[in-house]
Image (cartoon, rainbow, N blue to C red; front, side):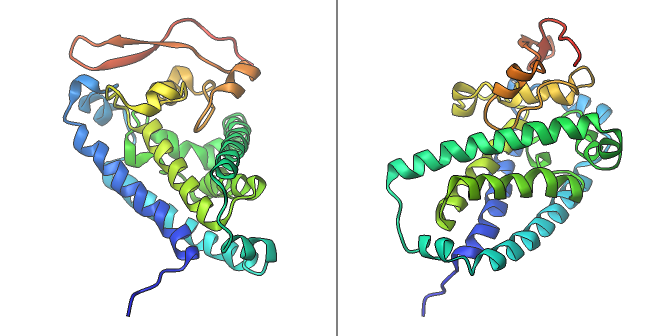
Length: 260
């Protein structure tokens, strides 16, 4: 007898599984120093938490998010429109439209939430500063954060993007996995040639690396897909990629940006 897994369980656990598989692919690639934005020495000197602490923190965050998502699925499980969508396959064009809408919603929500987390001293000190203990980001640190920060930023952002785009449960699972992969890529700190995320998105690991540095914490808030809100709101910090003498690259600001 075949083991059946419900769409709800897939929606909860597939992004978690994808997170660890994709991020550990980048851990393997860390041996290619010539493509990295930071050296191992920089990571050890600048980061305020160990990798083991980050792993434990991410697992705690994912456990909390899985519980919240389980409750959300229970609440919306009685919604007739959501239930009916499970058995109605969407056309390719409808799915593309839903993905675009969800990407725009997620970017809008995360930009303004992220920016407010930095400008509100209480929220930054007590919650968002956990994520910035990683001055030198790496792939599996993408979701390292305080549970309150993770709930407001990731869980709520994902839920809003799915609901407002009108996705079915199955489509939302693919979208959340895609968003998870993109978040990991933005934190990986490795510029592998031919990476499609670096080719098609200006919002990439170099762009987000600037935000994690001390000179960039008030800039480049956009996540995870586009940079439009930074450009519109005047918080975009341009940069150039410079080769380091010891190997690898550095994302260096090309000019000073004005404070808000």
